[in-house]
Image (cartoon, rainbow, N blue to C red; front, side, top):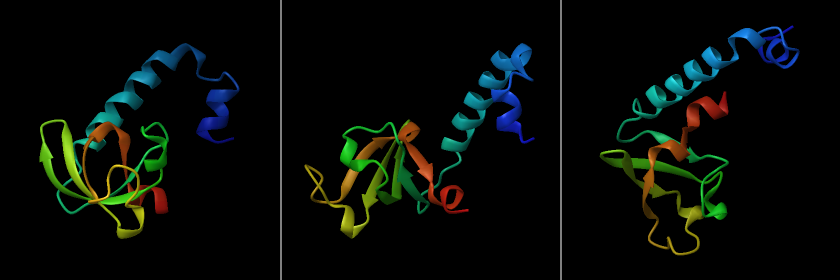
Length: 99
């Protein structure tokens, strides 16, 4: 039985709060490990919805936000230039998704 199945079955019910906290901290640390030039993908909670799943490259950091360049095929909606300032929390590294 894998970790997710064990959690779903209730094996770790006494530790759920600690597991949630650890996952949130890990997610935050992963976000701030992104660097200029890294490939990212918009996550499933990003708005506007048509950006979800679109891939881009990080151009620069601006505190908790990043300036990104969408892939050519992803220029949609009001982002026709392909450049967007986005919250880093909505981005996922492409490498982790592809593996």
